[in-house]
Length: 390
Image 1: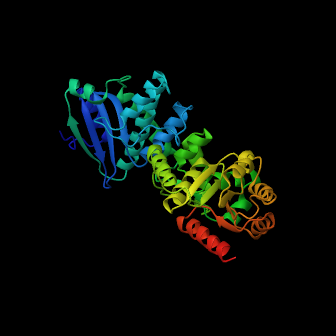
Image 2 (image 1 turned 45 degrees about the vertical axis):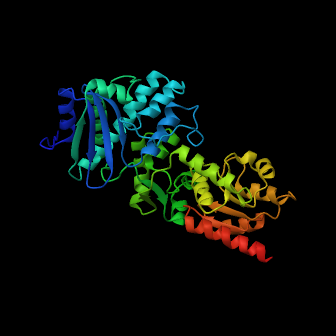
Image 3 (image 1 turned 135 degrees about the vertical axis):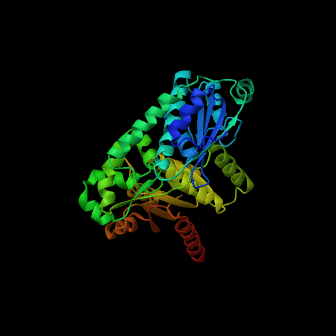
């Protein structure tokens, strides 16, 4: 069935509801990205796909399954069934990692976010909507044996339309919440904002977290957060850029485990940063280029963790709470076991004062954020060569 004769996405979804449609609805624009909505007798069961499906899942896990750590969980988020990645929700319920009411809210949140993106895309281009009908009995037995609840698609659509309307009213129509803010002119930005705000910008606006990711982490409405950043974007102090999706945790876990077991004699590199996202990015780069990696996110645990791990190389974030990178570096240089290990600072600051402080505290090199693969790899190689030549 093709519903392209209906002009608006909302009209088409209401059509499916009225027809008590059961099956999968696929939606796409001019790109290869596909969104999928699953209905049973015209009511919403699940929605998935889109620009950043794994980023979306991580935000949902953080909010509705706080006991589950995204990076260490053993659920295969990448597997697909007849109902997309609905199986993940089933696993969460079976393991009692979330409750039924939370699961229903999770479904609504996922669908509202997807419909918002589609409404924004529809404002720019024509959407293609196709459907694959299924019998109710086969649909339920193929992947929905634990169907938690059938949600009113009209209510979710209404919430998405309201969110899109407010987004437009705030002048954000051209800005996607899937973009990531990053600092551009740090010196000017430091003059424009208070010290605390600037440090928060350094810590959070690294071009690796989307507006939705930041909103989730900060517990702040994404519309208010984006509105607060718009003046800096208009002044060319910040930019918003496209970023790739994160990897599913199981694949990363298997990959890291495989690489470390493969050769335990490979150099071990420690990454110390209070941002889980930065640690994971570094871990992916390091493992992919033939090294082992250990991540440390608690600054107070940095020194004992380093003594235990005895790494060959250290990447160290400067702007951490409680104990900053300069202090950790100074501590490391006082330990005989660690004092000769190369230390490279990671920071959003790139001023002469910061470089002098880094040198005084015992650092070997200094890399500015946002993280670039080439810089990370070339720094490791150059310092290793320098160390070997000595």
